[in-house]
Amino acid sequence: MSLYFTKEHEWIRVDGGSATVGISDHAQEALGDIVFVEVPEAGRRVTKGQEAAVVESVKAASDVYAPVSGEVTEGNQAIADDPALVNSDPEGQGWFFKVKLDNPGELDGLMDEAAYRDWVNTL
Amino acid sequence: MSEIYDSATLDKLPLDSWHRARGGRMVPFAGYEMPVQYEGIIAEHLWTRENAGLFDVSHMGQLFIHGRSVDAALERLMPGDFQFAADMKPKYSLLLDDDGGIIDDLMATRRGQDFYVVVNGATKYGDIDYMQRRVPEDIIIDHMRGQALLALQGPRAAEVLEAIIPGVSELGFMQAGPFQWEGRSLWISRSGYTGEDGFEISVPAIVVEQLADAIVAHQLAKPIGLGARDSLRLEAGLPLYGHDLDTKTTPVMAGLTFAINKRRRAGGGFPGAPRILEELDKGPVEKRVGLEIEGRQPVREGALILDGEGNEIGNITSGGFSPSLQRPIAMGYVAAPFAEVDTALKLEQRGKLFDAHVVPMPFVPHRYYRKGAA
Image (cartoon, rainbow over all chains, first blue to last red):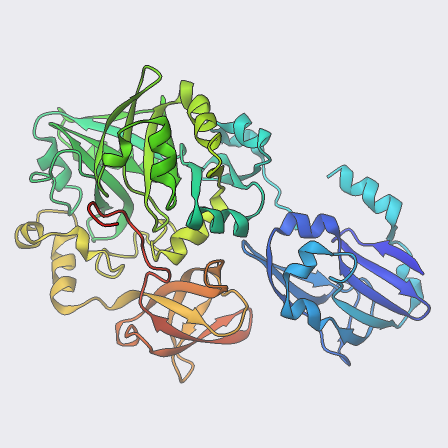
Protein backbone atom coordinates (compact mmCIF):
# COMPACT_ATOMS: atom_id res chain seq x y z
CA MET A 1 0.00 0.00 0.00
CA SER A 2 1.24 3.48 -0.83
CA LEU A 3 0.00 6.83 0.43
CA TYR A 4 0.07 9.97 -1.74
CA PHE A 5 -1.13 13.55 -1.31
CA THR A 6 -2.25 16.33 -3.65
CA LYS A 7 -1.53 20.05 -3.39
CA GLU A 8 -5.27 20.45 -2.79
CA HIS A 9 -4.83 18.46 0.44
CA GLU A 10 -6.49 15.21 -0.58
CA TRP A 11 -4.83 11.92 0.33
CA ILE A 12 -5.05 8.68 -1.64
CA ARG A 13 -4.10 5.29 -0.26
CA VAL A 14 -3.47 2.86 -3.12
CA ASP A 15 -3.79 -0.91 -2.82
CA GLY A 16 -3.30 -2.64 -6.16
CA GLY A 17 -5.87 -1.31 -8.64
CA SER A 18 -8.06 0.44 -6.09
CA ALA A 19 -7.63 3.30 -3.69
CA THR A 20 -9.24 5.16 -0.79
CA VAL A 21 -9.46 8.98 -0.88
CA GLY A 22 -9.91 11.56 1.88
CA ILE A 23 -8.75 15.00 3.01
CA SER A 24 -5.62 15.57 5.04
CA ASP A 25 -5.35 16.49 8.70
CA HIS A 26 -4.08 19.90 7.57
CA ALA A 27 -7.23 20.34 5.45
CA GLN A 28 -9.65 19.48 8.25
CA GLU A 29 -7.74 21.79 10.58
CA ALA A 30 -7.97 24.64 8.07
CA LEU A 31 -11.68 24.05 7.46
CA GLY A 32 -12.64 23.93 11.12
CA ASP A 33 -15.82 22.26 12.37
CA ILE A 34 -17.23 20.17 9.52
CA VAL A 35 -21.02 20.09 9.48
CA PHE A 36 -21.87 18.54 6.09
CA VAL A 37 -20.30 16.07 3.69
CA GLU A 38 -21.57 14.82 0.34
CA VAL A 39 -19.75 11.77 -0.99
CA PRO A 40 -20.08 10.20 -4.46
CA GLU A 41 -22.20 7.10 -4.85
CA ALA A 42 -20.88 3.75 -6.03
CA GLY A 43 -20.81 3.60 -9.82
CA ARG A 44 -20.13 7.30 -10.38
CA ARG A 45 -17.14 8.11 -12.55
CA VAL A 46 -14.71 10.72 -11.25
CA THR A 47 -12.02 12.54 -13.20
CA LYS A 48 -8.60 13.53 -11.91
CA GLY A 49 -8.67 17.17 -10.80
CA GLN A 50 -12.48 17.46 -10.97
CA GLU A 51 -14.93 17.80 -8.07
CA ALA A 52 -15.81 14.46 -6.52
CA ALA A 53 -17.25 15.38 -3.12
CA VAL A 54 -18.36 18.40 -1.08
CA VAL A 55 -17.29 19.30 2.44
CA GLU A 56 -18.79 22.18 4.40
CA SER A 57 -17.58 23.69 7.63
CA VAL A 58 -19.47 26.23 9.73
CA LYS A 59 -17.74 28.95 7.71
CA ALA A 60 -17.55 27.73 4.12
CA ALA A 61 -18.19 25.11 1.45
CA SER A 62 -15.28 23.43 -0.36
CA ASP A 63 -14.96 20.90 -3.13
CA VAL A 64 -12.92 17.75 -2.76
CA TYR A 65 -11.16 16.89 -6.02
CA ALA A 66 -10.49 13.39 -7.32
CA PRO A 67 -6.71 12.70 -7.19
CA VAL A 68 -7.18 10.11 -9.94
CA SER A 69 -9.76 9.14 -12.54
CA GLY A 70 -11.85 6.03 -12.08
CA GLU A 71 -15.09 4.46 -10.93
CA VAL A 72 -16.28 4.99 -7.37
CA THR A 73 -16.87 1.68 -5.59
CA GLU A 74 -18.07 3.10 -2.28
CA GLY A 75 -18.85 6.46 -0.64
CA ASN A 76 -18.35 6.65 3.11
CA GLN A 77 -21.86 6.79 4.59
CA ALA A 78 -20.36 7.14 8.08
CA ILE A 79 -19.10 10.68 7.39
CA ALA A 80 -22.36 11.67 5.69
CA ASP A 81 -24.14 10.64 8.91
CA ASP A 82 -21.51 12.12 11.24
CA PRO A 83 -19.46 14.82 9.46
CA ALA A 84 -17.42 15.52 12.62
CA LEU A 85 -15.64 12.20 11.95
CA VAL A 86 -13.67 14.04 9.27
CA ASN A 87 -12.33 16.37 11.99
CA SER A 88 -11.55 13.64 14.49
CA ASP A 89 -10.00 11.04 12.14
CA PRO A 90 -9.39 12.63 8.71
CA GLU A 91 -6.83 10.15 7.45
CA GLY A 92 -8.56 7.07 8.90
CA GLN A 93 -12.29 6.57 9.53
CA GLY A 94 -13.01 9.94 7.95
CA TRP A 95 -12.21 8.71 4.41
CA PHE A 96 -14.49 9.99 1.61
CA PHE A 97 -14.69 7.36 -1.13
CA LYS A 98 -13.06 4.30 -2.70
CA VAL A 99 -12.22 4.27 -6.38
CA LYS A 100 -11.04 1.75 -8.99
CA LEU A 101 -8.14 3.40 -10.81
CA ASP A 102 -8.32 3.88 -14.60
CA ASN A 103 -4.63 4.53 -14.92
CA PRO A 104 -2.07 4.04 -12.14
CA GLY A 105 0.21 6.38 -14.12
CA GLU A 106 -1.91 9.28 -12.80
CA LEU A 107 -0.25 8.75 -9.41
CA ASP A 108 3.03 10.07 -10.85
CA GLY A 109 3.49 13.63 -9.72
CA LEU A 110 1.57 13.25 -6.47
CA MET A 111 3.55 13.82 -3.25
CA ASP A 112 4.50 11.01 -0.92
CA GLU A 113 3.73 11.46 2.76
CA ALA A 114 7.12 12.91 3.79
CA ALA A 115 7.09 15.40 0.91
CA TYR A 116 3.54 16.49 1.71
CA ARG A 117 4.18 16.99 5.44
CA ASP A 118 7.31 19.01 4.63
CA TRP A 119 5.40 21.13 2.11
CA VAL A 120 2.49 21.76 4.51
CA ASN A 121 4.95 23.04 7.10
CA THR A 122 6.02 25.73 4.66
CA LEU A 123 2.44 27.02 4.17
CA MET B 1 -8.68 25.69 1.28
CA SER B 2 -6.79 28.63 2.69
CA GLU B 3 -7.35 32.29 1.99
CA ILE B 4 -4.62 34.48 0.63
CA TYR B 5 -4.56 38.13 1.56
CA ASP B 6 -2.11 40.93 1.95
CA SER B 7 -1.78 41.44 5.68
CA ALA B 8 0.24 44.61 5.09
CA THR B 9 -2.94 46.48 4.16
CA LEU B 10 -4.81 45.41 7.30
CA ASP B 11 -4.89 47.21 10.62
CA LYS B 12 -4.08 45.49 13.88
CA LEU B 13 -6.39 45.45 16.90
CA PRO B 14 -5.04 46.58 20.29
CA LEU B 15 -5.40 42.93 21.35
CA ASP B 16 -3.66 41.51 18.25
CA SER B 17 -0.83 39.74 20.07
CA TRP B 18 -3.21 38.68 22.87
CA HIS B 19 -5.40 36.85 20.30
CA ARG B 20 -2.40 35.16 18.69
CA ALA B 21 -1.02 34.06 22.06
CA ARG B 22 -4.34 32.36 22.77
CA GLY B 23 -4.34 30.47 19.47
CA GLY B 24 -6.65 32.86 17.64
CA ARG B 25 -6.72 32.17 13.90
CA MET B 26 -6.50 35.62 12.35
CA VAL B 27 -8.45 36.50 9.20
CA PRO B 28 -9.17 39.77 7.39
CA PHE B 29 -12.41 41.41 8.46
CA ALA B 30 -13.54 45.03 8.20
CA GLY B 31 -10.00 46.13 7.36
CA TYR B 32 -8.46 44.42 10.41
CA GLU B 33 -6.84 41.12 11.18
CA MET B 34 -9.33 39.53 13.54
CA PRO B 35 -9.63 36.16 15.30
CA VAL B 36 -12.19 33.96 13.52
CA GLN B 37 -11.79 31.18 16.08
CA TYR B 38 -9.60 29.85 18.89
CA GLU B 39 -10.55 26.25 19.72
CA GLY B 40 -13.39 25.91 17.19
CA ILE B 41 -16.54 27.75 16.20
CA ILE B 42 -19.06 25.20 17.49
CA ALA B 43 -17.37 24.80 20.88
CA GLU B 44 -17.09 28.59 21.24
CA HIS B 45 -20.70 29.10 20.18
CA LEU B 46 -22.04 26.58 22.70
CA TRP B 47 -19.75 27.93 25.43
CA THR B 48 -21.28 31.39 24.96
CA ARG B 49 -24.82 29.99 25.14
CA GLU B 50 -23.96 28.26 28.43
CA ASN B 51 -21.28 30.38 30.12
CA ALA B 52 -19.63 33.66 29.14
CA GLY B 53 -17.81 34.50 25.90
CA LEU B 54 -15.40 37.42 25.50
CA PHE B 55 -15.46 39.09 22.07
CA ASP B 56 -13.01 41.74 20.89
CA VAL B 57 -15.08 44.19 18.86
CA SER B 58 -12.52 46.99 18.86
CA HIS B 59 -12.84 47.25 15.07
CA MET B 60 -16.18 48.96 15.57
CA GLY B 61 -16.30 52.74 15.47
CA GLN B 62 -16.92 54.50 18.78
CA LEU B 63 -18.05 58.07 18.26
CA PHE B 64 -18.72 60.86 20.72
CA ILE B 65 -21.07 63.38 19.15
CA HIS B 66 -21.71 66.70 20.82
CA GLY B 67 -22.64 70.31 20.23
CA ARG B 68 -25.71 72.52 20.36
CA SER B 69 -28.96 70.61 19.70
CA VAL B 70 -27.09 67.42 18.82
CA ASP B 71 -30.27 65.39 19.40
CA ALA B 72 -32.14 67.34 16.72
CA ALA B 73 -29.15 67.04 14.37
CA LEU B 74 -29.10 63.24 14.79
CA GLU B 75 -32.82 63.11 14.03
CA ARG B 76 -32.12 64.58 10.59
CA LEU B 77 -29.87 61.54 9.86
CA MET B 78 -31.77 58.74 11.56
CA PRO B 79 -35.36 57.78 12.42
CA GLY B 80 -34.65 57.38 16.14
CA ASP B 81 -36.24 59.50 18.86
CA PHE B 82 -33.16 61.27 20.18
CA GLN B 83 -34.80 64.42 21.54
CA PHE B 84 -36.76 62.42 24.08
CA ALA B 85 -34.14 59.70 24.55
CA ALA B 86 -33.61 58.90 28.22
CA ASP B 87 -30.13 59.32 29.64
CA MET B 88 -27.84 56.26 29.50
CA LYS B 89 -30.28 54.07 27.56
CA PRO B 90 -28.73 52.70 24.35
CA LYS B 91 -31.07 52.89 21.37
CA TYR B 92 -30.76 50.89 18.18
CA SER B 93 -30.97 53.15 15.15
CA LEU B 94 -30.20 53.35 11.45
CA LEU B 95 -28.22 55.81 9.40
CA LEU B 96 -30.30 56.37 6.25
CA ASP B 97 -29.74 57.75 2.77
CA ASP B 98 -32.25 59.96 0.99
CA ASP B 99 -34.03 56.94 -0.50
CA GLY B 100 -34.48 55.39 2.94
CA GLY B 101 -31.70 52.87 2.25
CA ILE B 102 -29.64 51.77 5.24
CA ILE B 103 -26.09 53.21 5.33
CA ASP B 104 -25.38 51.54 8.68
CA ASP B 105 -27.05 50.24 11.81
CA LEU B 106 -25.80 51.46 15.17
CA MET B 107 -26.37 51.99 18.88
CA ALA B 108 -26.72 55.56 20.19
CA THR B 109 -26.75 56.44 23.88
CA ARG B 110 -27.52 59.82 25.38
CA ARG B 111 -24.91 60.92 27.93
CA GLY B 112 -26.36 64.12 29.30
CA GLN B 113 -26.35 66.58 26.39
CA ASP B 114 -24.05 64.36 24.29
CA PHE B 115 -24.32 61.07 22.43
CA TYR B 116 -22.08 57.99 22.41
CA VAL B 117 -22.56 56.09 19.16
CA VAL B 118 -21.17 52.68 18.15
CA VAL B 119 -21.12 51.94 14.40
CA ASN B 120 -19.91 48.97 12.35
CA GLY B 121 -16.19 48.59 11.70
CA ALA B 122 -16.37 48.20 7.92
CA THR B 123 -18.53 51.31 7.54
CA LYS B 124 -17.16 53.64 10.21
CA TYR B 125 -15.15 56.01 8.00
CA GLY B 126 -17.98 56.35 5.50
CA ASP B 127 -20.44 56.95 8.34
CA ILE B 128 -18.28 59.70 9.82
CA ASP B 129 -17.93 61.41 6.42
CA TYR B 130 -21.66 61.19 5.78
CA MET B 131 -22.58 62.53 9.20
CA GLN B 132 -20.05 65.35 9.01
CA ARG B 133 -21.45 66.49 5.66
CA ARG B 134 -24.98 66.50 7.04
CA VAL B 135 -24.74 68.04 10.50
CA PRO B 136 -24.41 71.75 11.32
CA GLU B 137 -20.87 73.03 11.74
CA ASP B 138 -21.15 73.33 15.51
CA ILE B 139 -21.80 69.59 15.91
CA ILE B 140 -18.54 67.76 16.68
CA ILE B 141 -18.04 64.09 15.81
CA ASP B 142 -15.10 62.69 17.74
CA HIS B 143 -13.83 59.29 16.64
CA MET B 144 -12.67 57.70 19.91
CA ARG B 145 -9.64 55.96 18.39
CA GLY B 146 -8.04 55.43 21.78
CA GLN B 147 -10.87 53.23 23.01
CA ALA B 148 -11.09 49.47 22.61
CA LEU B 149 -14.44 47.65 22.82
CA LEU B 150 -15.06 44.27 24.42
CA ALA B 151 -18.30 42.30 24.62
CA LEU B 152 -18.91 39.71 27.31
CA GLN B 153 -21.94 37.62 26.42
CA GLY B 154 -23.77 34.67 27.89
CA PRO B 155 -25.92 33.60 30.84
CA ARG B 156 -22.93 33.75 33.23
CA ALA B 157 -21.62 37.12 31.92
CA ALA B 158 -23.07 39.15 34.82
CA GLU B 159 -21.51 36.84 37.39
CA VAL B 160 -18.10 37.04 35.69
CA LEU B 161 -18.08 40.81 35.21
CA GLU B 162 -19.49 41.59 38.67
CA ALA B 163 -16.48 39.81 40.21
CA ILE B 164 -14.16 42.24 38.38
CA ILE B 165 -16.24 45.41 38.26
CA PRO B 166 -18.61 45.51 41.23
CA GLY B 167 -21.96 47.10 40.45
CA VAL B 168 -22.30 46.16 36.76
CA SER B 169 -24.93 43.53 37.49
CA GLU B 170 -27.20 46.35 38.71
CA LEU B 171 -27.57 47.55 35.10
CA GLY B 172 -30.85 46.62 33.46
CA PHE B 173 -30.96 45.34 29.88
CA MET B 174 -30.31 48.22 27.46
CA GLN B 175 -28.98 50.43 30.21
CA ALA B 176 -25.46 51.89 30.38
CA GLY B 177 -23.22 53.82 32.70
CA PRO B 178 -19.71 54.85 33.71
CA PHE B 179 -17.62 52.52 35.86
CA GLN B 180 -14.12 52.60 37.31
CA TRP B 181 -11.62 49.75 37.06
CA GLU B 182 -8.02 49.93 38.29
CA GLY B 183 -8.23 53.71 38.24
CA ARG B 184 -9.48 53.79 34.64
CA SER B 185 -12.84 54.97 33.33
CA LEU B 186 -14.97 52.40 31.53
CA TRP B 187 -18.31 52.85 29.79
CA ILE B 188 -20.42 49.70 30.09
CA SER B 189 -23.81 48.90 28.60
CA ARG B 190 -25.90 45.80 29.18
CA SER B 191 -26.44 44.83 25.57
CA GLY B 192 -25.00 42.65 22.84
CA TYR B 193 -25.32 40.76 19.60
CA THR B 194 -25.86 37.13 20.63
CA GLY B 195 -29.41 37.05 22.04
CA GLU B 196 -27.96 36.35 25.48
CA ASP B 197 -27.53 38.56 28.52
CA GLY B 198 -24.25 40.43 28.36
CA PHE B 199 -22.25 43.62 28.38
CA GLU B 200 -20.35 45.84 26.01
CA ILE B 201 -17.35 47.52 27.59
CA SER B 202 -15.60 50.58 26.20
CA VAL B 203 -12.09 50.62 27.68
CA PRO B 204 -8.94 52.67 26.98
CA ALA B 205 -6.88 50.64 24.47
CA ILE B 206 -3.78 50.94 26.66
CA VAL B 207 -5.39 48.80 29.39
CA VAL B 208 -7.60 46.50 27.29
CA GLU B 209 -5.10 43.66 27.56
CA GLN B 210 -5.17 43.76 31.37
CA LEU B 211 -8.98 43.84 31.36
CA ALA B 212 -9.21 40.95 28.86
CA ASP B 213 -6.78 38.95 31.03
CA ALA B 214 -8.83 39.66 34.15
CA ILE B 215 -12.01 38.49 32.42
CA VAL B 216 -10.65 35.25 30.94
CA ALA B 217 -8.95 34.45 34.27
CA HIS B 218 -12.48 33.60 35.40
CA GLN B 219 -13.15 29.93 34.73
CA LEU B 220 -16.55 30.70 33.18
CA ALA B 221 -15.12 33.07 30.55
CA LYS B 222 -13.28 32.24 27.31
CA PRO B 223 -12.27 34.29 24.27
CA ILE B 224 -14.66 33.78 21.35
CA GLY B 225 -13.96 34.49 17.68
CA LEU B 226 -15.85 36.12 14.84
CA GLY B 227 -17.11 32.77 13.54
CA ALA B 228 -19.19 32.11 16.65
CA ARG B 229 -20.22 35.78 16.79
CA ASP B 230 -21.78 35.26 13.34
CA SER B 231 -23.54 31.97 14.17
CA LEU B 232 -24.82 33.37 17.49
CA ARG B 233 -26.29 36.50 15.93
CA LEU B 234 -27.83 34.46 13.10
CA GLU B 235 -29.61 32.20 15.62
CA ALA B 236 -30.75 35.36 17.44
CA GLY B 237 -32.26 36.63 14.14
CA LEU B 238 -30.11 39.77 14.24
CA PRO B 239 -29.17 41.27 10.87
CA LEU B 240 -25.54 41.88 9.89
CA TYR B 241 -24.75 45.07 8.00
CA GLY B 242 -23.31 44.48 4.53
CA HIS B 243 -25.13 41.17 4.30
CA ASP B 244 -28.71 41.46 5.61
CA LEU B 245 -28.78 45.25 5.49
CA ASP B 246 -27.44 47.66 2.88
CA THR B 247 -28.47 50.75 0.97
CA LYS B 248 -30.94 48.67 -1.08
CA THR B 249 -32.87 47.73 2.06
CA THR B 250 -35.05 50.00 4.19
CA PRO B 251 -35.87 49.65 7.90
CA VAL B 252 -39.37 48.47 6.96
CA MET B 253 -38.13 45.79 4.53
CA ALA B 254 -35.68 44.64 7.19
CA GLY B 255 -38.37 44.38 9.87
CA LEU B 256 -36.69 47.00 12.05
CA THR B 257 -39.71 49.28 12.49
CA PHE B 258 -39.35 49.11 16.28
CA ALA B 259 -36.56 51.66 15.74
CA ILE B 260 -39.10 54.25 14.49
CA ASN B 261 -41.40 55.42 17.27
CA LYS B 262 -44.79 57.12 17.09
CA ARG B 263 -43.40 60.66 17.23
CA ARG B 264 -40.97 60.06 14.35
CA ARG B 265 -43.65 58.33 12.28
CA ALA B 266 -45.93 61.31 12.78
CA GLY B 267 -43.30 63.95 12.18
CA GLY B 268 -40.98 62.39 9.58
CA GLY B 269 -37.97 64.61 8.94
CA PHE B 270 -35.40 61.81 8.52
CA PRO B 271 -33.76 60.79 5.22
CA GLY B 272 -36.09 58.75 3.02
CA ALA B 273 -39.09 59.54 5.24
CA PRO B 274 -41.64 59.72 2.38
CA ARG B 275 -40.77 56.21 1.19
CA ILE B 276 -40.44 54.74 4.67
CA LEU B 277 -43.72 56.21 5.89
CA GLU B 278 -45.45 54.87 2.81
CA GLU B 279 -43.95 51.41 3.40
CA LEU B 280 -45.12 51.57 7.02
CA ASP B 281 -48.61 52.37 5.79
CA LYS B 282 -48.91 50.02 2.81
CA GLY B 283 -46.29 47.41 3.55
CA PRO B 284 -42.93 46.95 1.82
CA VAL B 285 -42.44 45.14 -1.49
CA GLU B 286 -39.93 42.74 0.09
CA LYS B 287 -39.44 41.51 3.64
CA ARG B 288 -36.62 39.95 5.62
CA VAL B 289 -37.59 36.45 6.80
CA GLY B 290 -36.09 33.54 8.68
CA LEU B 291 -35.88 30.16 6.93
CA GLU B 292 -35.45 26.61 8.15
CA ILE B 293 -33.92 24.30 5.58
CA GLU B 294 -34.53 20.56 5.20
CA GLY B 295 -31.54 18.27 5.49
CA ARG B 296 -28.11 19.07 6.87
CA GLN B 297 -26.42 21.14 4.16
CA PRO B 298 -25.96 24.84 4.91
CA VAL B 299 -27.45 27.29 2.39
CA ARG B 300 -25.48 30.51 2.42
CA GLU B 301 -25.51 34.13 1.32
CA GLY B 302 -26.21 34.50 -2.39
CA ALA B 303 -28.46 31.46 -2.80
CA LEU B 304 -31.71 32.14 -4.67
CA ILE B 305 -35.16 31.82 -3.11
CA LEU B 306 -37.82 30.36 -5.42
CA ASP B 307 -41.58 29.96 -5.10
CA GLY B 308 -43.37 26.64 -5.67
CA GLU B 309 -43.32 27.20 -9.44
CA GLY B 310 -39.61 27.93 -9.58
CA ASN B 311 -39.91 31.71 -9.98
CA GLU B 312 -37.17 33.71 -8.31
CA ILE B 313 -38.70 35.69 -5.44
CA GLY B 314 -35.66 36.66 -3.37
CA ASN B 315 -32.24 35.71 -2.09
CA ILE B 316 -30.45 34.49 1.00
CA THR B 317 -28.43 37.16 2.78
CA SER B 318 -27.06 35.07 5.69
CA GLY B 319 -27.08 31.35 6.20
CA GLY B 320 -25.24 28.62 7.95
CA PHE B 321 -25.32 25.69 10.28
CA SER B 322 -26.90 26.43 13.66
CA PRO B 323 -24.76 24.85 16.38
CA SER B 324 -27.56 25.17 18.95
CA LEU B 325 -30.27 23.68 16.74
CA GLN B 326 -27.94 21.30 14.84
CA ARG B 327 -29.54 22.23 11.52
CA PRO B 328 -29.10 24.75 8.73
CA ILE B 329 -30.86 28.11 9.12
CA ALA B 330 -30.85 31.24 6.99
CA MET B 331 -32.29 34.67 6.56
CA GLY B 332 -33.10 36.46 3.36
CA TYR B 333 -35.48 38.76 1.55
CA VAL B 334 -38.61 37.55 -0.23
CA ALA B 335 -41.41 39.28 -2.10
CA ALA B 336 -43.92 40.28 0.57
CA PRO B 337 -46.65 37.73 -0.33
CA PHE B 338 -44.20 34.91 0.52
CA ALA B 339 -43.17 36.26 3.93
CA GLU B 340 -45.92 34.54 5.95
CA VAL B 341 -44.72 32.02 8.53
CA ASP B 342 -44.91 28.41 7.25
CA THR B 343 -44.75 29.42 3.56
CA ALA B 344 -42.97 26.59 1.72
CA LEU B 345 -40.17 27.77 -0.57
CA LYS B 346 -37.27 26.33 -2.56
CA LEU B 347 -33.69 27.52 -2.36
CA GLU B 348 -31.17 27.14 -5.17
CA GLN B 349 -27.45 26.96 -4.47
CA ARG B 350 -24.79 25.81 -6.94
CA GLY B 351 -27.47 24.18 -9.11
CA LYS B 352 -29.00 22.20 -6.25
CA LEU B 353 -32.52 22.72 -4.84
CA PHE B 354 -33.40 22.71 -1.15
CA ASP B 355 -36.79 22.66 0.59
CA ALA B 356 -37.27 25.43 3.13
CA HIS B 357 -40.05 27.19 4.97
CA VAL B 358 -40.50 30.57 6.61
CA VAL B 359 -40.16 30.56 10.39
CA PRO B 360 -40.42 33.33 12.97
CA MET B 361 -37.18 34.84 14.24
CA PRO B 362 -35.29 34.55 16.50
CA PHE B 363 -34.44 30.93 15.72
CA VAL B 364 -33.15 30.51 19.29
CA PRO B 365 -35.15 32.48 21.92
CA HIS B 366 -33.53 35.63 23.29
CA ARG B 367 -32.60 35.41 26.96
CA TYR B 368 -32.01 39.07 27.74
CA TYR B 369 -31.79 40.09 31.38
CA ARG B 370 -34.99 41.44 32.89
CA LYS B 371 -34.76 43.14 36.24
CA GLY B 372 -36.87 41.44 38.86
CA ALA B 373 -37.07 38.21 36.86
CA ALA B 374 -35.36 35.16 38.29
